[in-house]
Length: 236
Image (cartoon, rainbow, N blue to C red; front, side, top):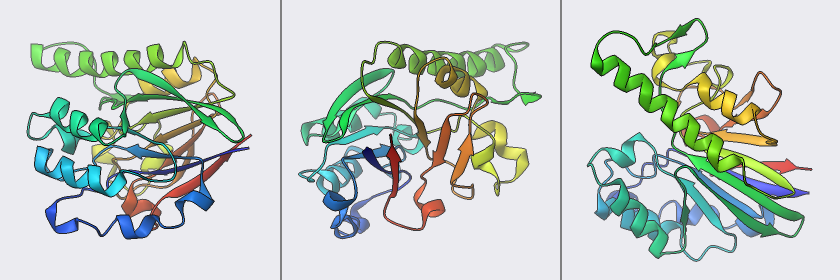
């Protein structure tokens, strides 16, 4: 058995310094790895990234993260990622990593993902250049996840995104904004590989549990949804 802890949308800034760290005291006994599903900062500044790095550095388990839309707000996602990596956090974007856990090798494929919507209610790559660019970015994000999943050799595999791959975990959000909360292309990438669990954030008013069309468990780990420091999920 491999046990995964996961949380997203912690939205840390200077005012939150030290507060989240205090909630991680039981992590070593709960899980083998901690996954962060994006929106780690409020406005994507380097200063906020330093707060995030301090909260999650030196933990008793490996930490693997993707960035979210808030982490892009100040147009410095590479700098944000570099600050986190300098403190030992593995930050993924269209990449995969393998973590050695007591119960086996865990593969994590990570990509922020993007919006577009779901079958019957999604944007299409047609019309104005702006719309084509919007949908093209979603396709490229999903393709990055697909590429990251393909070469992973592990006993269990998790797909880690910020945007949702399914509508299930958006229940509770206004239906009018579903198209801006995720994309079915992410689910297609997940179902095309041997994935055991998909984890995302972003939907603060959504629902924790869902499933891809192919039967993969999906968990919305946005902190407002969980109502606890992290969710814990067993694989195997």
